[in-house]
Image 1 (cartoon, each protein chain N blue to C red):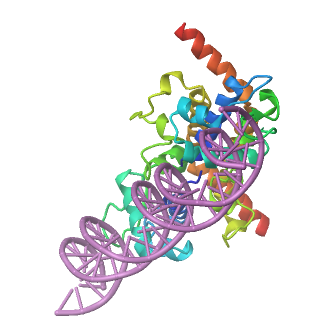
Image 2 (tube, rainbow over the protein chains, first blue to last red; image 1 turned 180 degrees about the vertical axis):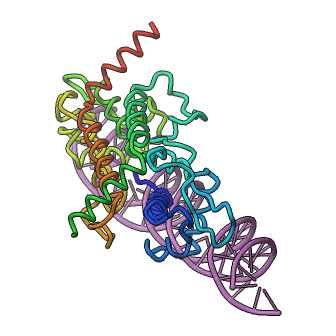
Image 3 (cartoon, helix red, strand yellow; image 1 turned 135 degrees about the vertical axis):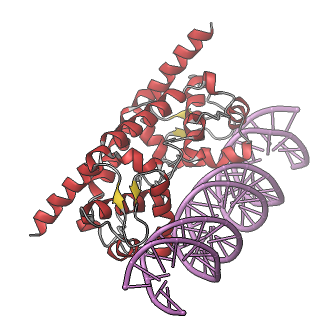
Length: 143
Length: 143
DNA sequence: TATTTATCCTATTGTTATAATAGGACAAAT
DNA sequence: ATTTGTCCTATTATAACAATAGGATAAATA
């Protein structure tokens, strides 16, 4: 059970934008790549997904940089996750397209369903602002 | 984020044994395969892992069938999970073999760590007996 | 003792999802 | 006119996982 690299990088990219955006200018893809040790090319895909999900934008085109479309406290980690995945689903027979013929008399179904709900709830409860607060604590410790 | 087929089948195999074992005789691999729609050959691997983890045994050799080594209320789903996986680890940098050089100043670390603990706690809190109880409820509904 | 057969063991193949790279088009800024 | 940050699509690598396969072993039983 592992979360994908895209989700992990997506969170880091969002953090990077949140930390470095300012009123007049956003954050360049290149700078995100440098600060987060990612290839600019690979970051292409990450940025694209975040844009499609309308979590970031670069309204005035090139050279404007990327900014968050909402306040960090209004962006949940579930929002970020779902920019890359169709949703949270710990096993296939949890999804709508149920294949398992035994699902109606499956004793394990309740167990997996409970886990799925737990994970969704956790992702939904944490916001980008929470991670920014964590970042502040870390930075304080260093200084 | 998906749990492996082996873990899912492992839980089902354990349920099958718990439901059908008796004082004098255990459950045959072949019968588990038939009842759970799995190939006998694939079940080989599942059974092997469960044996190595000492969750089941067939002490008197062939024809004795498999029995649980402990009471269902003393077997957690985490025990079953860990018969197939080295442990629960939602992202690689959670593992002991930490590769990520940014881990000491990573703002996302707390988020992932919290999730990891949550999932472990859930797996540890549920026992095979809980699933047997669920099974009883399901069976009651049918009758 | 020969045969059956459930289990045991190891190797191999098939399959899929993911990670990452690559090449170039486009359009705004200078 | 040229630069360059972004945009778009295709392709390749890679690795983990799912599943099959073939045969060895040893206990039961005929």
